[in-house]
Length: 88
Image (tube, rainbow, N blue to C red):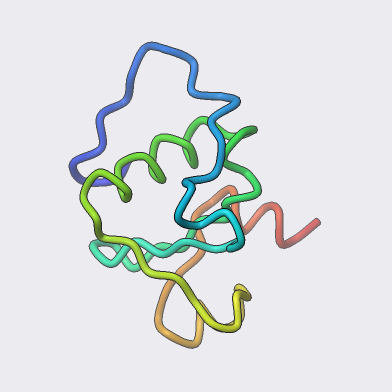
């Protein structure tokens, strides 16, 4: 779990992408150097909770170009769900 993240009992599925990042696919967490696939935010509870915590802490990073390769180039590691999605 992300430091400072609070897992809620409510189901977070169906959470939309953060408005500020609607046109982005990958969102990085500066605290943990993890990158999350925003396309998974509505289907993976772990990603949704992590993105919510990143937005609350304002510790986000976007990448240009918006690719997983660029995130890795900047030292960010993909989270479990992002790695699984990239392998498909």
